[in-house]
Amino acid sequence: MKKIQVGFLVSYDYSYLKTALPQVYKESDSIFLAIDKERKTWKGESFIIEDEFFQWIKSVDVDSKIQIIEENFYCPELNSMECEVRERKILSEKMGIGNWLIQLDCDEYFLKFKEFVAFLRTKDHFLDNPEKNQIQISPYLINLYKRLDSGMLYVEKTSKVIVATNYPSYKIGRRTRKRVIYYKGLVLHECVSRSKEELEMKFSNWGHDFEINKKALIEKWESVNENNYKTIFDFYYLEPERWKRLEFVKGTTFEEIKENLDLEKIMPTSFFIWKKNFGQWFKDFFV
Image (cartoon, helix red, strand yellow):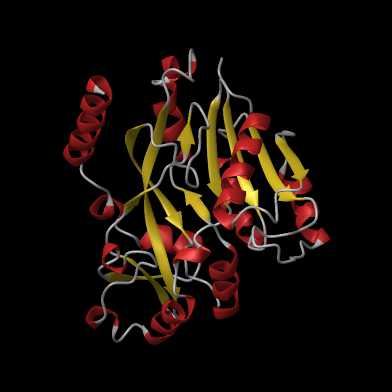
């Protein structure tokens, strides 16, 4: 049977993997952790991974599923997005083309991964000749915006996120620009719900660093709170209006937040997803 292969890009925010990895461990056939050999970000800045993290990996890998891939993923002649795409392609080659290639970031917590795997199994025919039948699979992100004393601010509307493909012809991040199959599922994204120091590190070193106004983004992030979030708008870092409004959920841990979110209300409807998939099929069929 074709395998369910999961890969994580591990860098300065490696600690989030302690929440992300357990969500996918049981249903994965193998899990690959890509770590820069020299501990460099895509911008060439240095980071440290404590030894305790690798001890934790050993302790949770009860079925010997986890492989650590250490290579030089930072290339000074490439910009940060080019470094990201290169790393993702290298990682996918290690994961094995001909399998389901699921790539997640350490700050992405897949909800109900078992159901997602069952959905992928209904699409296994796309693995028979993947290069000629390239597809991408997209569930939806709940983007977490800011931690407060009593809970979390998150973006009101979900956004699509490409997490899986049958062929890794990545162009921007995980996107291949091939046909998208939308999936009615959710991923909690610890996007900018970090400390100010962590946020500055992220904005300086991720694949979109050259596209954003870091100072303005952090100032807005600092200003919003539980009392004023309903009066402030446009929060997205590239096209602000894409994150129009925020909502609030009580809870300080992943489990509390997951329990208190009204997932059915947040989830796109089945009809909406059907329309999206029909449009993608129609476009793919006639192009």
